[in-house]
Image (cartoon, rainbow, N blue to C red; front, side, top):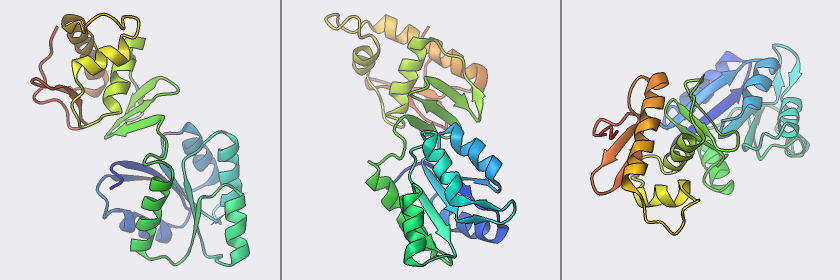
Length: 242
């Protein structure tokens, strides 16, 4: 299973965009965003946060070459695995795509099952997460390298400590993270001091309040005797301690 994925489709033709969307709709955790021209593709792709890129070889709408867009994204440091879709299916066309930075090449017309299988293969080959520096949980996006968090594109203001807690929870989304783990990962200045429960709970409560200012509801649940859980649905069973 590949879990939640954020996929950028660079495709100008509505028909093919619809076929890709229909194919990926079978995977409820996969979220597709489309860029229909080169400028949008470079803006969205360059901003990062996508786990997979699906790139049309030719964007006839503005005469752009999909491989040129991909090469520019690679030069900008975008490392998400890329699958090129194209009506050009000869061996030399595949070689051109791979040379431009693609990780796979699928000729049009494509089979829906094969498209999904190719994407799953890309994720497995890239280490089970296309971009381990970016965690996407529902509308929440946590960028580890940039140390930023966004909710549906809106920046969430966090202190450094609050971000470290959120990043730890995001890296274990859906699973409880114990207070002992948080203490070990976040409070690294006190390696020989046992976990200070009150300190941890107060810090998590501050993070909850910071998230609610932007999100509007709690994303962190408290699991008795287990710790804290970050979920996209919210923390219905959470207790705001402090």
